[in-house]
Length: 254
Ligand code: NYM
Ligand code: MG
Image (cartoon, rainbow, N blue to C red; front, side, top):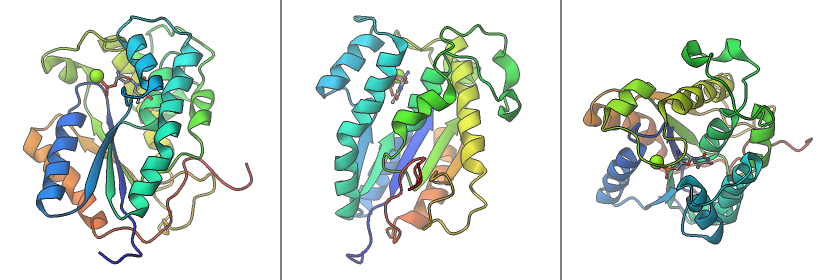
């Protein structure tokens, strides 16, 4: 790899039990087996002091206000943002199991969604929300300016198919009703990101700074098919990236 090229920042997103962690491991092994330098990161990173607070919340050992836990998830990314940037600049690819999109989707699912027409899965619109203050925009704001992924692979699966994979665990949020709402918000995020896919020149930030590479992968398929589908999008990035690291939802004028 030429020294002027940085690593690619690849994020894997999806509902609980969509296969993200399995697929991240498969991809890391594949890259390493080809002698390509790649680092796997995961959010929440439960090893830091903030991560331990998040862990206690998820395991219901601590109760936190919905705003507070949202900001802790975001802070957990900000405390590792420089590690992401430095790793990419050293020429190593970063694979990331969940990122800002999970942060928005899980928190905003606690509130009513405003832009219903933008959402492809209206199935759970009758599920009551628990906190009207966690609007999509409010949830997105603390993520603004974080290193932007070059590619986000959204592993799409219905909550029914996900729960059929051995059921959800014991953590907070691992309930079919909440997952259905989370999928709706992911749909809204996807629409927002996909609307930027028209922009061919990815070296320029788009008008509101969002990075446009959002790809939906059918995660209901078998493991090998999913890996293959994901790899088709990752392969063009493994020679490295020429453009500077972008910033999420960021532009100079705001
Ligand atoms: N989660 C994850 C959030 O609510 N906000 C975030 O910013 C992130 C990164 O934490 N149900 C939720 C999604 C999961 C839970 O994640 C734990 P994992 O990948 O199961 O450890
Ligand atoms: Mg989990």
